[in-house]
Image (cartoon, rainbow, N blue to C red; front, side, top):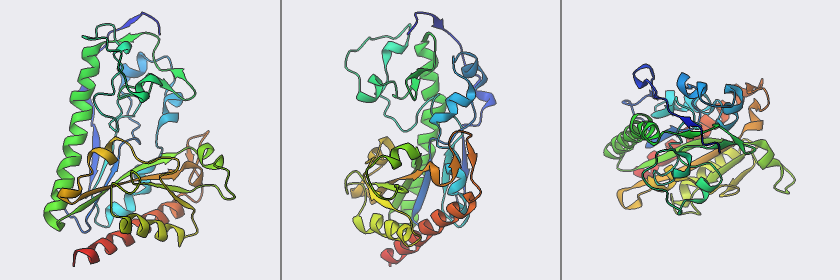
Length: 294
């Protein structure tokens, strides 16, 4: 990385950090989170990136919030990040910060996480395939502002929704919604490409009856589902899972090839059909969870 100093500030007063749907009228013990579908790029960020907006969007979980919106409209709260993950990744721990990215970091620690080493910590350094987002080093204070004004508000509101769900139903299943490149789904040496991955931290994040019910609901619609392959779960799935408080998590990964043209970043003609199938499966799970409560 160049030693050039990129010293800029974001005017967060102009930015709506996230969207929230059906936050009050909870009809099912489920909360939906979509942390990586944001498309609202701060102008100052784009001006200091060496990549185009189109290149930056390749890291995005395109249309995922829209995919699950029908389930939210039926009575499930949904929080959807507006800011892209290339600006700040709310599905990372705050410790996953590569201080080598900054010209004024207070400490130059040699102990960094695996994600930081490959440039995908809480502040991304690269996009696939290893393209640098910046041509210089960032201001540490500016990145701390990203955490204060973007990361913290998202998690504060997500926690509030989960707590509200627990108060009403006695428990909560947080479904963290993501997408995965079809390339990953097509190279797993299987006869049929993978459609969905249900990530449960290897059966640690939620009771198997919950994840298996959702798997059957999707399989009944002729989709292929795997558990914890190729992903097992990330920060939100791990950090929000608190079985002793009756809070469970499940990370849902959707094959992008099912519903979009990944090169053009556009929906396929059967987008609404795929969305409906996913939402109906989630709502069937919701009714199953209500029966568990009785």
